[in-house]
Length: 157
Image (tube, rainbow, N blue to C red; front, side):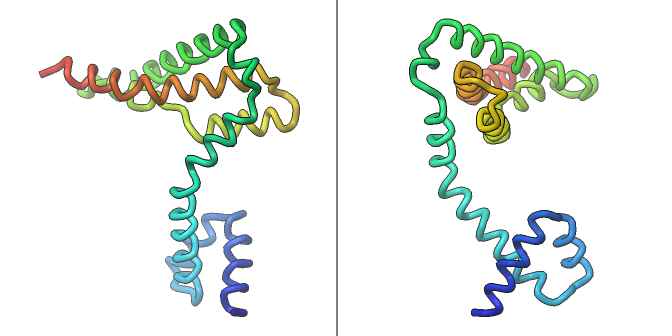
């Protein structure tokens, strides 16, 4: 029991410095593998609770702001800029690659965008309409990407 408690405290300290775990694994220090196993278990928990995260993030916005025409316009603008930005980001891939498919493959915005939007809302720099527009943008880029990527990959024999 004491060993598990020490390992939990160790995981908390390592979460502040992730490279330290890699260093300890490479050096073969005692206890590093137990910590690594606990971190892998956290990944399993994350996979089970990810849908809850997305629901909770969506609930932070007000339903009225989701239906506001200004919010819808802002969400469409965010979505267009997000898609164009990722397509442009795929251009440096080089001439031998399908740059459009690379850009489209990078298009989905997910957890990270929602986390930053939630933090911004929490500290008051993002209002309800902007937050709702960001949530809609995340949903749209996630839903639009698979068919767009399928089209892009099928356009060349």
